Image (spheres, rainbow, N blue to C red):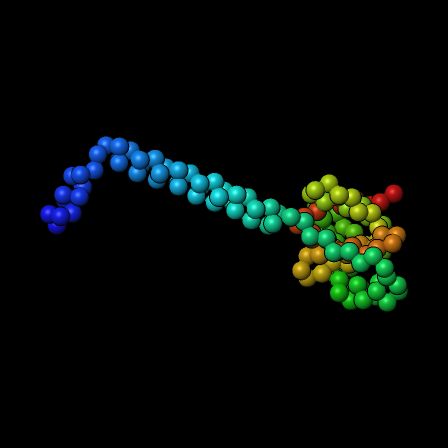
Length: 132
């Protein structure tokens, strides 16, 4: 124990100041990286997921009706039925216009546009209206 105390008594104020500065820099770097990781996780969590089938035929549409069996979409007090032409605005301001195919139990909305079938997360949709 005496030897340990002798070692501490040999330290000068410059040693203490240097140790404090190094601890501050290490803490600062750690906090910067942890904030970056948090932001990255948040972006992944909030990112929209859209699934697109670019080529399809009648079988693909029938299969989508099986995968998306719920034929009524209730959104902000309005109801949209299978076969209606709808206009969907996502939270990232993407606009999808097409025929409503159905809704899945996993809250994915399926829409058939002119040349593709799109499935999009319901919770990532900002607005749904009847297309004109």
